[in-house]
Length: 248
Image (cartoon, rainbow, N blue to C red; front, side, top):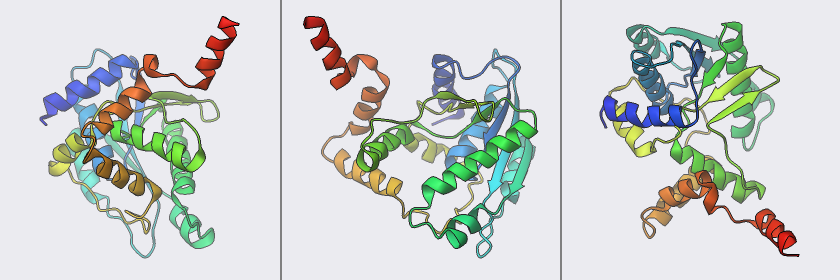
């Protein structure tokens, strides 16, 4: 997809969920992967014509895998080209998760610590919002992860406020398909993941499962997304019990 088409999809999500307001200072979480770099590129382009005036700061939380360090110099160059301030926050998260805690399922703890560090740096640098690169496929995968492994019907929201951190989390790519991001990010300076658990997670299992299902149900992703985002398609027991009470 072209930048114009990608911007159209992102702008629809921003407008639908009122993600950006005039005067916002937005910290963009940058892992170096395709999703976060696509988000940064599109937000940098969007601010040129956006009806809301806002500032951007790109922040990378370096997990600091000592045996396999990350090189974020291509990201720094990319941010310079976009005229976006770039901050790298060095942490010991990699050591804590894999060496100290020796987590068998490291993703949940790592994600919690990484986001916490991101929000702290964002607030320290005057940002009132943090933008994450989660897209439509992430929305449905998270829903299935909660269903399969926690027995919950839950997923993340396009916008949420964290009172403890006093920061609003936004996900401008909420309506965007991963396939379009993969195609678009071919020309972006994507950094290879240095995480020891890369491609060996519960999330990868769910993604593979949905891919298998899609061979028989071609639009399974769209159906999942629609079921999550359209309230008129919701008909679970809390709603049924309310209707029973009304009948009685």
